Length: 462
Ligand SMILES: *Cc1c(COP(=O)(O)O)cnc(C)c1O
Image 1 (tube, helix red, strand yellow):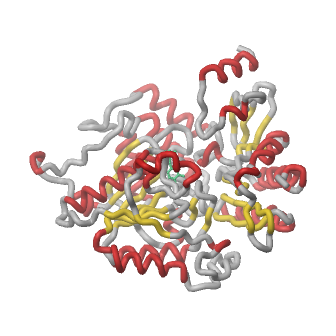
Image 2 (spheres, rainbow, N blue to C red):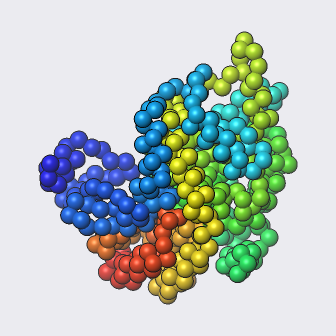
Image 3 (cartoon, helix red, strand yellow):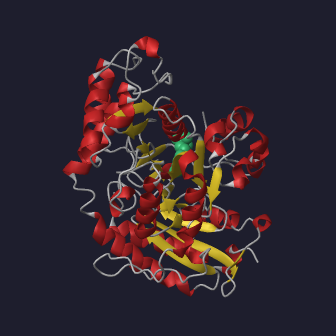
């Protein structure tokens, strides 16, 4: 089929996610034919830098040969089998590896198949744990404004991005909300941290005064809370909000002091994105639940896990008639092909020493991005690991955002495609979410193209 015929059928049959289809009434979607490394190719041979890792999941670039080999070999043996009462080698080996890679205290692995379910599983486990551990009063849940944990009704209920979820507000279960540590617009009115020192040390200019509302909430509600769910160090979908490890450490200590479970949603930040294998490492805290998905299979196949402690696992363990079973599971929980892809990705981490190779790339990214601060419409520039975000503002001194109706990201998205860049701004936030395999040369090219887009006033909504 030629491209025109394909796109006619696309319009006829596909309803795309997070997409206003009307935008494509007169214009075709990008029709991707193949992908290699950081690049996507269409059938005319045009190439596009996948600067957002195909929705934050590609880790070692597309079509990595080691991962392809792992999946191909698995495909010869076992395609799919249920995980209820049955096991298989890829799921077993992957679980053992994940327990080894994460801090002590995360001892058990529960499989599912996407990030939303990974978070729902953690919430359900926490609630059921308290019921069967003599604390049925612990039913409350705490989450951050601007947090994002998925699009199911349960995870929307704990989400704080009203742009996405307000149509369903009447279905949401109640939960407590906390203002997030948005350092650029500090809720406590303190100055934002300086960039980290050369040795990586954080340079805060505050004492995390913004934690006071958490302390107050815990003093009031702490004994009735089951869990606090949050994205450690980087709130991705809520606007690429990067916050200090110090905040995470102190918030975790406070939460723990009231016996409340901590659920770390590392669906987006896991697997090297923030410069360490997991974002929690930067703060040295271990949660009661760790949710992983996007980068777990290196982005090749859908899979998710919820990890937790032996102690929590034991509260579900008993004779069948005691009714402690966790009745939850998905058709494709622990799918063997996905588990093989994940093992392949972890093998690449070892073979290529991916994490150790990040620091020169991150330093190069900083150098290449520094000049964007000169642009009058760039209010904030922030980076964590291989993720960088530019917050565009209508007025820099007043940090005045562009009104949502101006849709400042749309002309930038279109101009990016012209430059061979797949940029997908989140509202007023233009960001790079680079595969860890991105080379310094590619970083130079990408940021130069991004400069062509963002330095041109014609691309900025006025
Ligand atoms: C993407 C994302 C989710 C949801 O994952 P899906 O696989 O899209 O359901 C949950 N939490 C965070 C932090 C995410 O970025």
